[in-house]
Image (cartoon, rainbow, N blue to C red; front, side, top):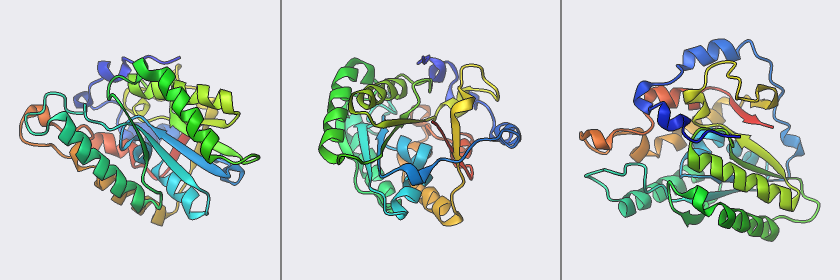
Length: 257
């Protein structure tokens, strides 16, 4: 389904599709709302610390505010975001990202993520293990008869860890019978409006309140290792510069239903 090289082939510095282009097009596309009333429990699976907040932070906060339990599962600790950094070695970077993630989810009214600690950049090699561990979590935490949604990065998102996470979550849902909901992150970077490889007919939208959006913004601001340079060295450049954040901080969130 996916093409895990799309993120690599469209570097962050190349800026990707500008948010104003997306806004112009999305304004003309009708998307049904996300039917949150049909969710009794939400499990959000993130390949890296920050993906869940960037992709569905407002959806998580809206759900938690409504009294629905939300559990975040962090697949990796994110230690490979700056592989050649002269400033932070992978272990220190991972520790920083875990702390950022804990603060961000707290701001959204969600408890600390459950952490699997799989290798950042190597999720596909551990896909079967990830599936098994997700099934174990779902079996242990979800009660019979609950309408459980499992949110994971889209299987076509263009980043190998994102796509492997989506595949593992889809398989776990197939085994447990829960609903799979996919959220794009890097798709907004490399895709163009009307991109044939994107199943636009599956898109559902959330228009969160101003308060929820403000909470998401505060949560995203916690990811300082990603939104700011680690140093002046080019190897420490921000992973999420302003033009990337603009696409992920728009006043709506969209998932693939």
